[in-house]
Length: 267
Image (cartoon, rainbow, N blue to C red):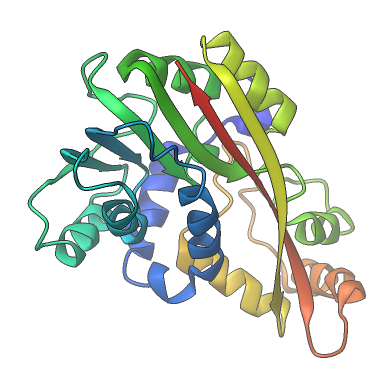
């Protein structure tokens, strides 16, 4: 596994735990991506048990309840690595008795084989170290001819921020992400078929680099690489990065690119 994907799971859990109270206020992009991902579900294929993998604050868990036909839906398993996220989800969806909550790592699924009809995961799998193993485990728990539907960030995500930092130092300040071709390869190795992948670019605009970085912190989306620069970033380095980023400014706003890969596959 490339060192670029050597993620610190404890830091990830901690970051998302802290972000549970602020996440919904700044998750406009996540809601847009989630809406697009919901449209990818094959609702003609009955989904008795759904796993919402990386459910976060439960916004999309609630949307799944409205999207999947009631006649086929039996249970949703809302799974997240951060207990405060699950607590927020449960409070939000307290009136729905057909949701079970599981605090677990997506790379260690505590679910019996061939027990799930649909695995749904929006912008969560980029926090996994070994996607080939994750896909193999998802294949294990899915029933025959059932579907995996997921979105994840692609390598062009935050390219402006990455480029600005590259003008200042050689450290990794922005997480790396797999390409569509790599994801397809991992899915094939795990035994998935009828793989369909599309890429969509979302542009978010901000008044300042500080606003972008504050939003990433409120989302819990910190750089979580093991081996990252452990030194304190100096004011000079930070200002140098901001000056480099300002080259992208258009009028009052600066852009941030988010490349999102949406994929569906069946076992």
